Image (tube, rainbow, N blue to C red):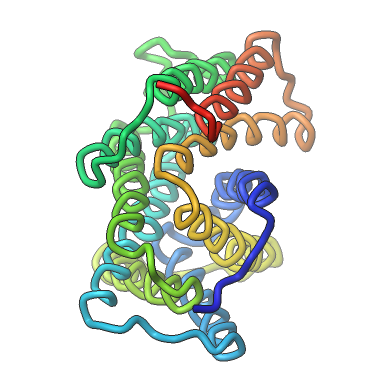
Length: 299
């Protein structure tokens, strides 16, 4: 089996940085296309590039129809339900930071689902790390939002909140499903099949609910290119590598860093200030991730 290789220490940090740009890329791209229309173009271009990489790498196709089925289900959940939910929520007015905060609940959801489906044993230190990370996650973004009921729903509807929680469920279940049924997949051909499963969902949503119109501006083209090469190919291959190498709870712990990086990038790129509470939150997240991914955890 031929898979892309990268330093086990470098992989998570490179993944986290690339993945953190996804929320910003979505916000930049959605003014020019509807959510599932944007995703359909993104996935089609990704499929073309992945097929070329597969031919060059001489990757093998999955060995059975059942393997194809499992890969397509995983792709539908991770790339279709997850991305579709986030994109739709942002399109309906939810701030990208708030969406990333909700998605940051993934490690808890993933650990819970992994315990049920994979019977993975999550240690007390892992649970403690996950909870501390959750606290830090909320502190990072606490200063950016009005958490009063009337403030929370201003600017976007209840449906935006619902779809982003559906998105959270999709990425959590999809990652565990990947670990359970697709652990022996070829990294290139397996990811290609996953994207095909996601494309079926996205094109169905476009046909049923969207116009399919796109404004082909320079900003849209640049954003789409980054989403294809940086996120759909680079970040996802890194994620698949991490899932194959690590237990599900430890993979999920890295996602706690994403909202922190979103906040830091917003400060650096757009001059948004980070208060004392946010800085404390970033430190808590870093501590929680270090605790959760430690290979020397005791019970």
